Amino acid sequence: MPNILLATDADWILDEVDAALSDGDTRLFRVRAGIDVLGAIDQITPDLVILDEQIGNMGGIAACMAIRNAESVDRIPITAVLLLLDRAHDIFQARRCDADGYIVKPFDSMKLRRAATALL
Image (cartoon, rainbow, N blue to C red):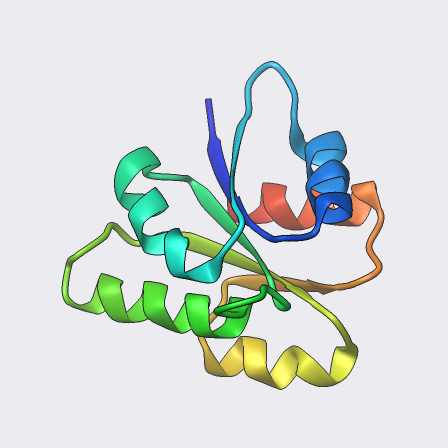
């Protein structure tokens, strides 16, 4: 049963991700702030972390960089990261922070499911 951690403060993104990925075999957890991502990874050991690029206090790019830094010193296990980008011009940032995948908003359920399945 895969555990997915979603970091977003936007309820519509939670609704879209829940509709696309929740089934009897998947558990979805949410944090509302990028700063809470590392603590949540410690608690639930997700198979996939989905980061919204625009989170109030610590955006998805910064949260992805924090994940990669924590992995590099063995603080957390290696974790797959999928970024939800606001525009195509942000793809270079997703690559720079070493995200495993990304999709550009707005996204549909099928696109999100394909991206998540590829990383799980």
